Image (cartoon, rainbow, N blue to C red; front, top):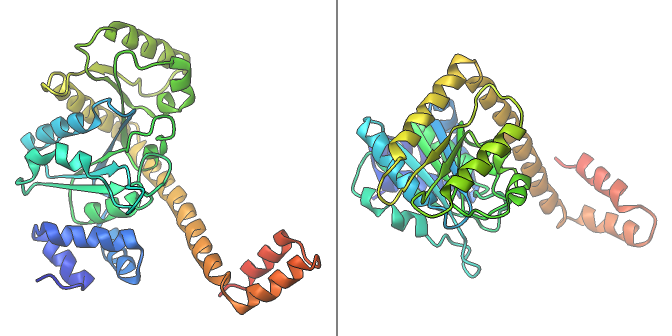
Length: 315
């Protein structure tokens, strides 16, 4: 039986115990002291995994493409971790687990770990706990990590904050190109995949993408446009090769580590804001808050000055 001790769980997880990996991710998701201990143990061991994000509208075939990429990574001898963000149940808050079901073929492969994470209402296409879960899998030594967004359309650009390579997946007849551009998907994409390319309209979609990318100006890396039929595996190998080319481009141009450092700076800022919000929520239940509230409701002190003073007094 697994213990709840973070060090023992880490040891078990490194030995390949999937339940231990799951326990570690659950701990960091819940944000309790045990989760903090897990992150303290594993963060110094990380920084080596290559993170690939896959995003696109619902029905674009993200899970099927991810499944195909897993096969190619495994064929190369690499172990893989997958974080698939599923919609959360409005009743329980739990993930519906659709993505993990679609990747069930890898369930018995000890070199693949797949975790569905509920979005829990978090905008941006990923779970708020995704960076922490990535830290766990990275610290455990998995060299490739795939992050699949929930598929929420125009809001799912947050994946770029976690991924070294971001793959944007569209399908023929993908809709209003102006709206897609406004969504920010063109700005974040390192690779563009037109999936279900055996459908009518694929040439128009490729042409629209190419024109919009040309309008975006020159970049050191020119995002390729690739065509796949993920259900049959057609073109998936080319996507895997393009991910490798983008990785080496980042390394050759000394862009990989600076980009990672920038993402960590932004993550620190978000962590700081989250911690302040947690302390502020705790402060809202204190006697001091009640005293200040009386001054605010009595029109003796405005809410904004009151908030600054309360924050200044937080321990």
